[in-house]
Image (cartoon, rainbow, N blue to C red; front, side, top):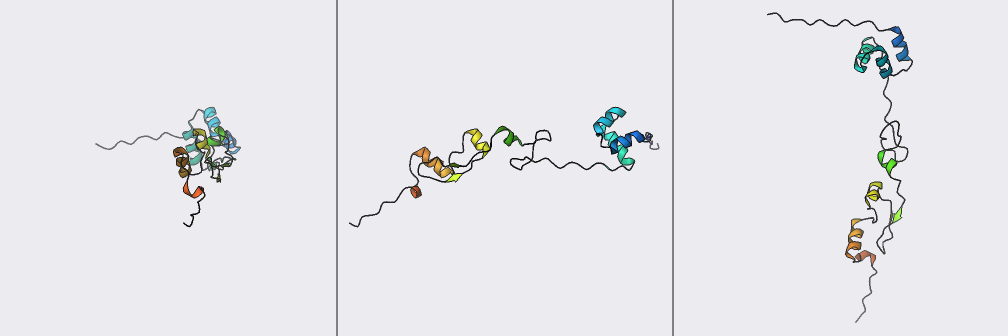
Length: 141
């Protein structure tokens, strides 16, 4: 039994109006809708006709933090949209005067009061940290 060959569907030539509209920066989605084609079918036909695809736009960046933005319509990242940028603050432990800037995520969770875990544990225990307490001078007895 001989293998059967499948007949390839004959492609109709591209409409010059379609090429003109594509080169005038009309979107593929609008052209596909107007001509009753899928996006992939239209892109494949343009590629076979020798028309180069348009370059992709660069990924948007958040103007606040410089990270990747969530979409082109909303120009900020998710963290910058939902949380204000934290301001520098002093550690909440008495006697510790370290100034730091906590993460926005930590502030949203209710954390970000201490600059280190050592200070957080010391405040929880109620005991001072040795390097923060003044040393008493030993008396020569």
